[in-house]
Length: 406
Ligand SMILES: Cc1cc2nc3c(=O)[nH]c(=O)nc-3n(C[C@H](O)[C@H](O)[C@H](O)COP(=O)(O)OP(=O)(O)OC[C@H]3O[C@@H](n4cnc5c(N)ncnc54)[C@H](O)[C@@H]3O)c2cc1C
Image (cartoon, rainbow, N blue to C red; front, top):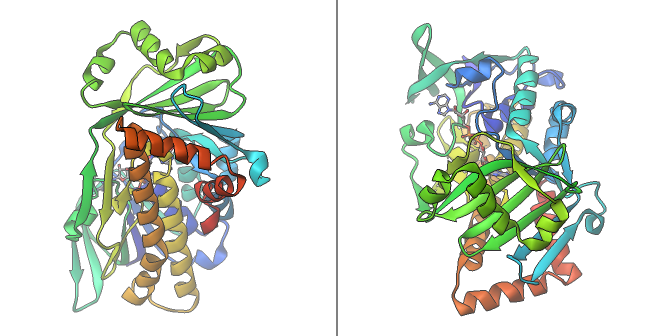
């Protein structure tokens, strides 16, 4: 019988496993943790399928630091963000967020997803209380009420087997099967947009500056990486996406440089595309009506997804697992049942409003910044002006950096 069985060893699920692991926290040794992952590549240490990188809020880096996994990420390479410039295309309405304004060494970090996953898996494998069940797939779940346990049907190379756990955690992403099997309903909305992700290399140093340039098609983000590379997240309208994806490399680069704008192109010098693939994703707004059921909790994208515009999706997931791990560890230390609904309710109460607030604000920002309506144009320019005022800027940075949940 597992104490906690996690489905999905992506960035959120693997972070939860590490937080409950015994490598740096001997009191976790008596917790029996299992983690089920369907991707066999992960077992072979191959994590770099799409070349994506994520903006990690300063607060999330502190959570990983406390767990003990941040050192592994730093060793593999993280890029501190010294400045974030938010602008409406090339118009002079812009806000500069600088690390000096908050007195921190960085506003956050850009970390390639492969670096995050490799570091988390390395740590998880060094924990004696974690069993990695991979490659394996969850087929069914059943809450056995007379014994008050969760039974999970799992398919793996050794065939189908049933596992039992005091708590099942769904960390299996936006299309979560665990969420669907538990009949948790969601509210969701699809955007008429596509996010195209590619990696570039510039001639001149990027100076650890990140850019969020709002265009009529949607936001265009440039996230600095090591060796003067950058990850570009280009939000295009659904209509223009097939044409952009079909362009040859030279034409694609030319279109992309137009979105960088002249002043930035002058700063960066010539640009070349480094990634061989153009990964593309359909952004979606989704929020689950509940995060908990008897002997079950959902975290990360399984519970909520948001438009990548603000780079907050995974940061919310990291805050989820931090809250859940703290609640479970306290319950364990007090000899309480880790899967009891009383314990799980504390997790849900700590996380629901932060998640909902960020998802709604992100949705509103995307709408306001993508609209060509004169009212919204005026509103966003007013917003960018208001953010010149130090107090408002610091409030925005406080939340963006995730400092309210550290
Ligand atoms: C273009 C783009 C840019 C983004 N940029 C940022 C950013 O800058 N900052 C940020 O914070 N967020 C960002 N995000 C969001 C972030 O990527 C997600 O929030 C994050 O990856 C969610 O992690 P997760 O572990 O919850 O889910 P996933 O990454 O989807 O992981 C789920 C895992 O579960 C496994 N799995 C699924 N089903 C099963 C099953 N039945 N059995 C076993 N295993 C299963 C999968 O193989 C996978 O490994 C971005 C998203 C996109 C699309």
